Amino acid sequence: MQLPTSISLTGNSAPVPILTYHQIDEAPARGASFRGLYVTAAAFARQMSLLKLQGFQGLAMTELMPYLTGDKVGKVVGITFDDGYLNNLKHALPVLVKHGFSSTCYMVSQRVGQSNVWDLDSGVSPAQLMDGLALRQWVAGGQEVGAHTRHHVRLLKNNEDTNLNEIVGCKAELQDLSGVSVNHFCYPYGEYTLAHRDMVREAGYASATTTLRSRCLAGEDIYQLPRVPILRTTTLPSFWLKLATTYEDRRRA
Image (tube, rainbow, N blue to C red; front, side, top):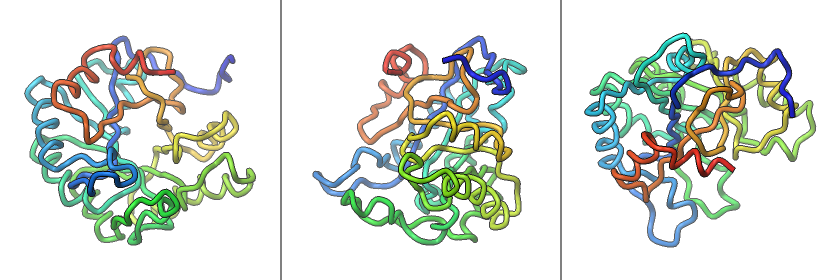
């Protein structure tokens, strides 16, 4: 399908990885639902150290944008966190600050200070989300806030008026809480249509990320950016393969 000409396309000549993290903490017991979405604090620290050692700069989405559009060239990687867990602030922030990295945390505006209630039906244990104070500490630490809808909804199951409210309202609410502009969006569950993509663009967001697996290649739709999932089982050698080779690109479908 040919994309509308109003959608900006990336012009990077070299692949740009955007890493996806969820919880930075010890994983629950074996057999727990979505156990793979936990990365230990020690593993995260090793991964960030490897990036630094190899000359990569870890960047939030706003700082990454010129590299995606081709206006800048450099050895960069995007770092993103989904949902806004308090353990991101506790375990990831000190490591990011240590290396001079920035990142974007996509937060659920009506769940700030609560827990991941959207996961209850899947049997996932509740985990504390950042409250307003923690969110502002995140920003003060040089990190960025992104939007993940107001209630972490499934866009495909709602009517369009509800979805527009979720997309637009999240931006406004997070800006009020953080005191800074919120310019980047992430589709919950990676579920969306081209109509939802257009809503995101018209709401004033500069980009949107998905769960599509790949590094960002030349010609990407800036509102359908793929990412590289980092999981509990991601060893340091496989972490490097995901960044430096076509390993993730081949899993795009």
